[in-house]
Length: 316
Ligand code: ZN
Image: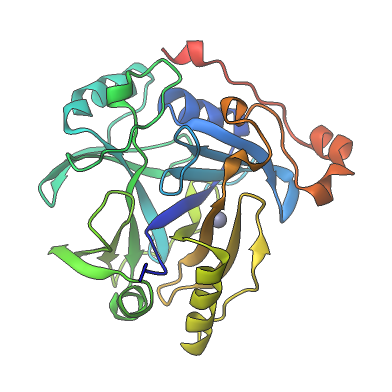
């Protein structure tokens, strides 16, 4: 039987200026803007989806860029670092590329035997590039990054929590994860051992709590295959006492949400239908796409959004 949870689906963050956000994730990191839409719960804010060629589950970093948003603070009770996966031969390329665009590498570390570059986006969002040999995914390039050095998708995510026991129980007993490794106060959980699924818990009982605003992650979404497996997960979570939402239609997937015991908002999102449902694969992300219910307000919505442009040739 296929497990109900297959790994990470997407990670959604709160950001500041939308143009700077686009410049960083599509320009410098070279992730494909696969969808430009609105925050369905706040239609005067964009929702950008960045990923591989098709925005496959496990590659999609999404942002709500609020113009003039205050900066938040990474801390306990949050997803503190989003890790992307690169080839082992790509580390020097990324050191040079980040330098070229004025992004300081804040730390170069080794964890579980893998080399990692740690840096932040313009809002202070914690990003890591993990060099690993296990990732066969192709990645995406706008042309400025050789395909062999492109980001392949997520490696995993780090949750910084005051304690791990209840979150571990949720991951292990309900979400197909198992404890895979430990290094100091970092505990790594995986499903089948593939990049794109790792969830690390860093236990920090005395750390300061995070403040959720620009530069912090809003939620972590896990993959489930279909609406049927999603409903099965919903029932399982309800039985275990979690306050799970109803199924919400996010156009490109269906979602349920609940808060894990450490304080991080979790989502479970379906792999289907995906981002090609309302745009041709060759033209993903080019136009502002709205859900049907918002189309009647398109003129008003467009006038409330700051126009953004992206020129790949500026990021060669
Ligand atoms: Zn989400």
